[in-house]
Image 1 (spheres, one colour):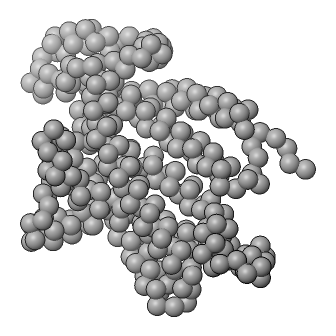
Image 2 (image 1 turned 120 degrees about the vertical axis):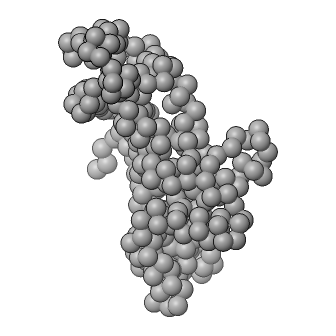
Image 3 (image 1 turned 180 degrees about the horizontal axis):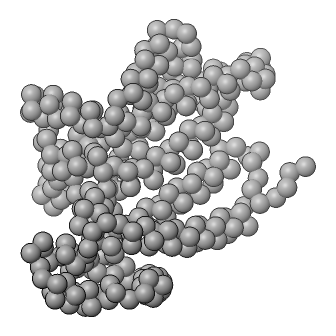
Length: 318
């Protein structure tokens, strides 16, 4: 296991190295002139050239890439071209806010989705199964912005129970802070819940039909023990994969939800950076999201080994 973990860490660094080249190349190919975006459309040619010289935007691309990577290795993410502030604090603050949404949504999705999936499998071809399956297909079909709009219209505008948009820090009070999180967390939960419940249901149905479950029941084990100690433990393996992918999406792919609720997280920050062609902010943000995706997949593989002792990474099984 230790050998496997070390290999995966090396692979992660290799992935980040390759991604750094791709990210740098893609950001350099973005349309628009950085200096003109900073100075505005009425800037003169001399002013634009002065900014380009100041920011060293005219240097050869290999030199710019080496300068960026060298700074990354020392922990320097560079300075925002538009806001003229260090990138690291900007990303750190946005990442913290997105992490709040991500982990709260992940907890709700895992707890509710797995529960619904188990109920649907146990009540196979009965009313609960049909109801949960219908909800799952509905959740997959409806985009996240639609759930967000419904929540805003019904719970915020019509009932007035929660704020429609915005974010306040925890220092403003726990109740106020939590009330601003309910709508985006509920939207993200509804978006991912259908996949988790469907995956858990199908995996549980497969495990309930295996020989070891039949043998466990023949031995007289309580149904609760058969379901949760034996069947669910193995059925969770594919569900963990979906959750691991969901972690990366929750950090980097929630720009729609953060835009709908005016939530200042990682996705909205990247959208701002792309709109203003803020290259250091784009490059650092995407690279960090890549690292989160890679670490999420590694965590999923380690959970595989924990939940299923038959899995042994790093050795050959005869």
